[in-house]
Every structure is written in structure tokens, then in C-alpha cells.
Amino acid sequence: MVNARYRTVFFISDGTGITAETLGHSLLAQFPDCRFRHVRLPFVDSADKVRDCVRQIRNSATNDGLRPIVVSTLVNSSIVAELRQADAQFLDLFEQFIGPLELELGTKSTHTAGRFHGIAESEDYKSRIEAINFTLAHDDGQSNEKLDESDVILVGVSRSGKTPTSLYLAMQFGVKAANYPLIPEDFERNKLPGDLLQHRGKMFGLTITPERLAQIRQERRPGSKYASIENCRYEIDAAHRLMRREGIPFIESTSRSIEEISAKILQKIRIPHTDY
Image (cartoon, rainbow, N blue to C red):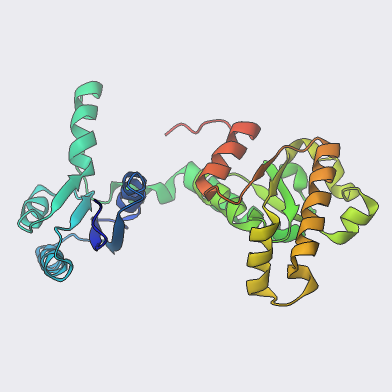
């Protein structure tokens, strides 16, 4: 029987902790019946900071009555050794992956803390910043200028997940993603705006169940026609008809994560891989 109590998971890094947290979340997601409390401890790069980590881990064990889990991307061996004085289940991601890579590549890694920080000077980083700026400028149909530069144009009814998906694609993959909300006027004329039609080949649709859409819209505009289940059903049905007629592929976002939605979109638009 799965323990109903929360188990604390620490994500500890000499940098931002985002890598440890991202990989850790992927692992923890395989245990949906367990309950976790997440704590990120970034920039652990000194003896004082690691001792504070040890104190927090020990306090957590006492308060929870369960041994904490520690997901670490620390590279300083002395800091790692001191951290291991705490009683916890350690998942040292560098230890797991760096050794096998050194053997495969036939060379030693730098074991340099914060090595990833140099990304700010890379072309990949600059392209992602450019993509983010493009995506923000083309959010929610704000602008139709330079749509020919877009990698993908997401379409769908209001509140179907276009903006967060667009930003995720831009931030993680450097994809220039515009998005356009399908509105009642589009359904009345049963046609996309002319500025968009010429870019039909770049379009990808997002849809959602009427029930979930109504729930989201009620939080934004409670009691409005915009949020009514009848209107949500009408808009979604009309959007489906419009996208099918225009040959726009679409995916339902209701039960899918942004990561999964984005993977489907990337598979469709086939953005070239980046060399690192």
C-alpha cells in the first residue's frame, strides 16, 4: 500500500537547479500514487550552503517521518561528500551519466560547476531569445507582420492553450510560434482571415473539450455567455469544421502536457535539429 504522507524531494545544484528539477520530475511522474513535496536549492557552491542543505534535509526527515529524496547535479566532489552526510535517498545525475559518457567518448569531462552558464554566448541561446521576442509580438493575433518568418502558427478557440504552448516552443526549442484565436467572426464567415490563409501550411490547431473550456473561462469571466457550456460547444464544433475544411492538423490539449503537445507539433513541422 502506498504511503499517503508527503515525501520531500530536494533538487540541489551548483547552478539554477532547472536541470535537476526537470529530470527529477520525469522520474517522479512514474509514481502517480505517491505524494511529493518539491524543494529546489540552487547555487550550492560553498561549504556553508551545503551545510544548510544538510540541515534542511534532516529537518524534513524529522517532520515528514520519511527519508527525503535528493536529486543532485552537483559536480564538486567535496560538496557532494558533505551532502551525503544527510540521511536521504540520493540520485546523483552526474554520477549516473558522466562516467558512462567518459568511457564512451574516451575523454574526461571538465567537472566544471555551472558549465551550462556559457550558453548565453551561444547561437542557440540567441536564436531562442529571438524566437521568444517573435512569439510575444505575435501572441493572440496581435500582429500579422512577418508571419512568413514563423515556424508554426497555432490556431484554436480562446483559452485552448495556444499561448503557453507557443512560449514553451520558443523558450525550449527556438521555434518562432505565432498564435491566432478563432473568434465568432471567423465562424460566421466560415473562413480564416486572408493574412493567415497564405500560411496555411504552417498552421497547427489546438482543441479542448467543451467542459474543460467552460471551466477555464468561468474562472476568467464567470457567468458570461463567453464561458457558457453551450457557447463553448458551439465554438469548438465550429473550429473543428473550419480546421478540417482548411486541412489544418490539430490535437486536443485537455489531457496532454505542454511538453507532449509541443513534441507532436515539432514532429509535424520538422524543425531541424541543433548541433551543440
